[in-house]
Length: 350
Image 1 (cartoon, rainbow, N blue to C red):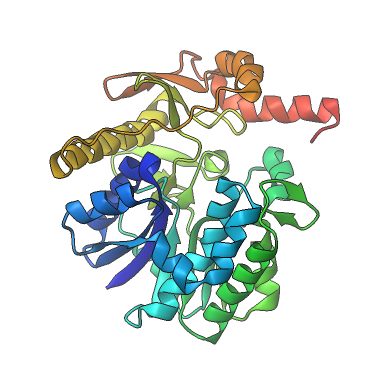
Image 2 (tube, rainbow, N blue to C red):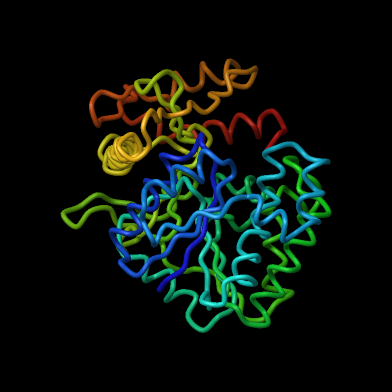
């Protein structure tokens, strides 16, 4: 079996189930361990009756790791969720002897091909990292971390377990959703792993953890064989910040800061994500009587209104019609990241 893990709450349940169905479709040997952050999520996952989809309640992790439970008292909810990032895979490797190696996945990922390249990249190594891979004009985002937490891997050996122990200790000490020298949430700590631990491998496959922030750097194309990145098949895409703003018709792409995808690529990826999300909702309604999707916060605060003019200019908010997402910018959006980077340099904020 190939063991993977993730975590999410009721608000992210359809995305988490879509992740699992895409993973299972491409890796029949997959087992996904889900840390259920509330009882509704745990009950819904159990109701699906899938033996390879294994829900573990948050209470189990907190009981096994009292220091984690204590940390909940001094940080915001999102910061507590960040703190779970090392504690959850560490708990699995310590408590489930059948897991010899484990890959962590953010719940907003979707698989498009066999995940075998992830395991091949880990190879005989002990720890797997994925770089953000920003294009040069987005290099200023590296202050939040050269590596991304979205896809990580560990082997249950001395280096792999030591890495998780060290990361957990750092996140328990400090895991704020703010930038400090050498620290940002759970993510900036990853930069120290290659120096501290042997067997750390940086993933070289361009189709692993393709994302809004790196697609412009990886020669992404849509062809007869589907989506490719630098000539390699797309394995897994990271749908970061992609969320509905109004019902299911107005969507925030999450791409304004990086570059908005053109029509064909956008709909090859996000059209597939919508299809998977809709199928997950249907499956949940069948398995859980009375289940309805719980709307996630659209974050309609000051930042939302401040960036609205830019989102309209570059078309980073999308109108969904059927399975198609429309921006109406006729390709202008791909320059949004460059444009904002230029504006920040002019303002001295880059």
